[in-house]
Image 1 (cartoon, rainbow, N blue to C red):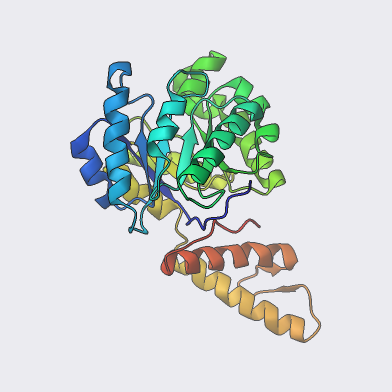
Image 2 (image 1 turned 45 degrees about the vertical axis):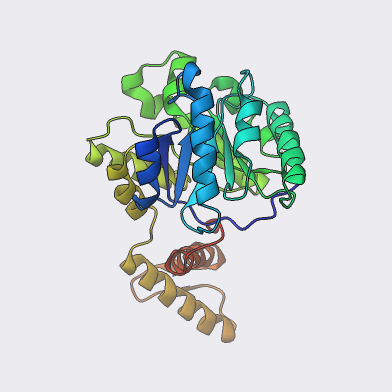
Length: 306
């Protein structure tokens, strides 16, 4: 079942531990486009039940809120907890389920089937809840193309820390060690027509300069959006994935010139600043304008792909 709901552009995805009532009460006011209420790594085994209850209460209080989007990261499909997680949190107010450590399409199909049963039982439209699969291992990378065909899947997220550990790479060289995997997810996502992948968290919370650099790099290779583990990271991530005024102005000017040229039967030309323009260049400009317009009016769709 394909997702039926409308889902906004998400530049920043801010995590909060599901068993921390104080943080659950603050995370929605940090300026993130989406919040991720975590039932997995941030919650110890003996606190899972309490976390489910707290998260369910939060979701019940968010039914009438449109922003930010609300996601829940459940425990892995290979654990004993994930079914109870879904049973507790699939209620109105939830938009996204993050599946951690995803390694096969079979896992996503299994999660989707349970979601379908719960949506039906709780009077929710089929496909209301979308899936985001987090890729954190070599097996997950190699199975990504098959996973991308699961109808409920909207995008991948990348988990660099676990991926680097899985392949035995040097954490100090994680940018290089993860480059192939990240580019693979970009290509798979594009080929499947799903949203671009979401960049991994930056674990050095106070190093906002490195956060900006690595977020710029992720955007440059085709990622859109980033997971955040501290509210201070949100403004940086939002800024990187927001087209700047000069960029938007130039894109609008190019589109205007393109329409004028096409009206005269001209399909390729050069702008006054020397920029060559043809259909491929125009598609990029159009994507910039569409993203800027979507962000300005409270977007409901993912970023255009050029």
